[in-house]
Image (cartoon, rainbow, N blue to C red; front, side, top):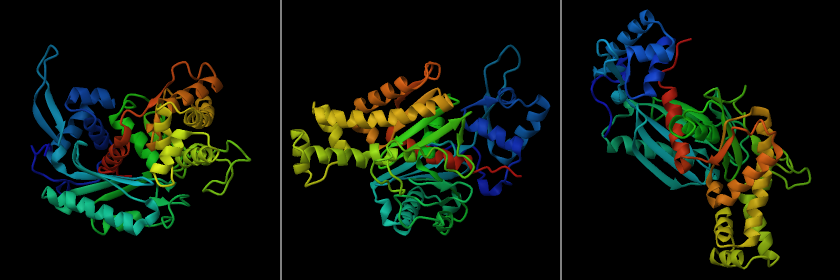
Length: 411
């Protein structure tokens, strides 16, 4: 394992929660490998008189460790500090509509073990979460780690979450999950762990913010296109969730009042018109109209079903009908994003989720629509690209979510 075991203390021996100045120093240390006291004073804005006792306490408790001297800047060589990654462990859990991705990580965010498998969120919380409990338990036991050293679990789910309570509220594609006590269910097995639940696209945005190309970007949007469509909003370097935790639910913006009925009960939602199932449904219509030999062959090979990935593969092989399907979805998504760009003026839009893998044509269509419908000033410094973390974004974000809540500020 790669954890830092310089200090033998564990988190259970350290008085928690931290005071606000201590938490601020810890947050800075978690973002950097090595810092001096002078570095910390500069980053936090604390005076030398204020930073010294805060750092001394964190070193005494074992949260920070002295790791030798740094380079001289003209005077005495500074003593360098490092965060003690070996204090404990966290788990990151990314529950998708059709997948489950879990990782065990140390306090530095270094992944120790990871597991991914196919799963159907419609199977309900008892089946999915019991699997989560078993997989996390197996990971801990395979590394000889007691449950008491798992201090937080970050969990992303594909539905609207009331962040303050960790409860799903009226999730369209998650029957049986509404108001299910996820936190209590996981704490039955991991009693020490803080369990933090958030919408999956917020978690993916947090992954890019912590480990991806969004790390140094103050304001950006993460758009997940999969079974549904959602948006994670990063504002001033923080995830913006809104008053109840449901900010960014762009999949239910209406794009056609005469469109199909959405899972939410309304008609013509972006999600119902342009997400993965809509792309697959449009492909089926093309096949029934004898409009694509490529798609017809794929339908026969798959035994009567098509997916968005099939459309992407056919488009890559030059199938014109498939290209038009992708362009139509990209245009609808881009038209919706143009409104967000005019409103929010982000520096970056990242596209992720399973449907993002169907090819460059989707991204190109989104870009064209955004540039066409947004004001020139709002797009002057705008970059639109695929997620730099790809399939890693969710689990990386879940780990970051867990780590954010290990040290809770006393109020």
